[in-house]
Length: 203
Image (cartoon, rainbow, N blue to C red; front, side, top):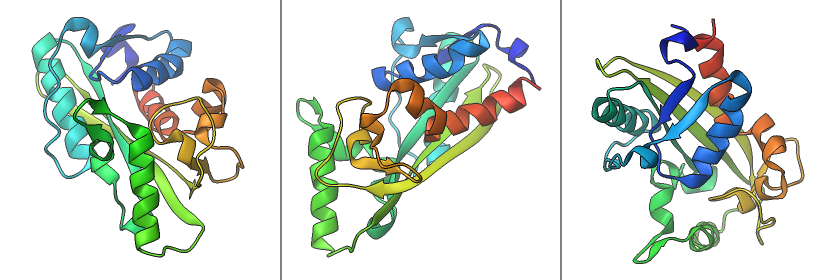
């Protein structure tokens, strides 16, 4: 496999603006232009699997089949040790409200759950990202990236998206939401998964 198999334009099976922005930033230096599934009017399949790998594969296969193009999908989330790995693959669900996703509410829910368990600090956690590349003929490949860290309360920072204001990566004192895009892209779970993808696809 090589990047030439997918060309210089890559369909990313996501409607999440934050994820799309990160993927563009990570892939642009390698001459790859990201096209979002939303730009092509592709529907989002329900994420019904119980693993990051399963949901990433489901989304990639659906997008590749609908567009007739290779498609890269990301499934990612926050796994909190004191919550037995929750919210995990249900990370986005913790932010769902009748009017859309509210990640400040999701972070409050995580903080409340930690309090209900009397979980001692540090609240260790990790961000996980699994990428799946699918071809229209049904072939798939998977790559995984993780970054360990801890949760903080109150949250800090205005950058990033999702749970970024609550998460401090190991080896740093800043939350992801206090880092610039370039700084986060050097250490994030998504950056690690993309690096693994590029190592294999550029070989």
